[in-house]
Image 1: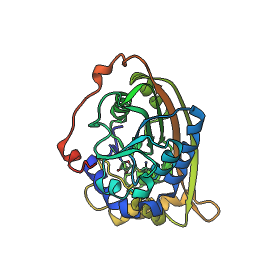
Image 2: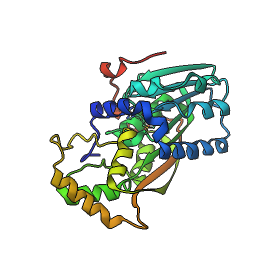
Image 3: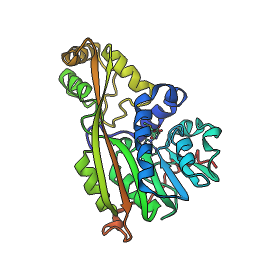
Image 4: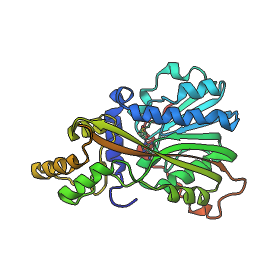
Length: 290
Ligand SMILES: C[S@@+](CC[C@H](N)C(=O)[O-])C[C@H]1O[C@@H](n2cnc3c(N)ncnc32)[C@H](O)[C@@H]1O
C-alpha cells in the first residue's frame, strides 16, 4: 500500500481514543467477527494455543473460549487502551491468557508458538500487510491454521471518490485486493489458501454520519500522506456534494468489501523466509502486560 498507507502513531492514537466506545459502535466489525467465528467448527481443529492478532477489545475471546476451552489465548494489539477494555469475564474459559501490546508487523512472540492464529479486521490497518502475514506464518506451528478477515479495495469507494473529486487527495486508505492476499499467503509459507469476498453496504442519512461512525471506531484516515492542514470548508462542501450522487432511497450508502480467508502453515519454511524482517520497536512494547 502506498498512497494512503496508515501512519502507525496516528493509527495507535485513533484506536486508543476509540477504545471506550468501540463495543457500542463497531457493529460491522461484530458482524464480520461472527461470520469468521462461524467458520471455525468446519476445520475440526482443537488448538491448544491461540493468537488473536489485532484483538481490539477482546470480543473474539468468549466465543473462542467456548469452542476451545482450556486453550491458552494470547491477545495482541497495537493499542493499549483496546487491550485494557477486554473484560475478564470474556477470558474465563481459557487455562491461560496473555495480553501483548505490540505491532503485528513485529510480534515479540516465539517462532511456531501457536496452533492457530485468528485475526479479524486488523490486516487492512497494517501498512506492510505482507510483513504482518509473514509474522503470522512465523508464529504458527507447521500445519497450524490461520483464519482472518480484512477489507478489500472497494471499501468506502463512495467516500474515496468524493474526496478525490473534491481535492484530489487520498482521504481513504488503499486496501490490498484478494489476488495480492492469495499470492502473499503462499509467499509467506502458507498452503491451500481459500479466500472469498462479500460486500456489505451500510446506509446513513448524510456524509457527516458516515464520517462520525468511522471516527467512533477509530477508522479515520491515518495515512502518512494525509493533509496536515485542516480540511478547507470548500473542499469539504465539494466532497459532500459529490457524495450525494450515490444517494438512493433517501439514504447515502457506504460500501465495505470484506475478504475472509484461511490457510495452513506449510511444513517447510517459506522459500524467501529470509525476507521476514524481525524488529521490535520498544515504544510498541511499553504496554505489554500479562
Ligand atoms: C477494527 S479493530 C478489530 C478488533 C477486533 N479484532 C474485533 O474484531 O473487534 C482493529 C484492531 O487492530 C488493531 N491494529 C491495527 N493495526 C495493528 C498493528 N499493526 N498491530 C497490532 N494491532 C493493530 C487496532 O488497534 C484495533 O484494535
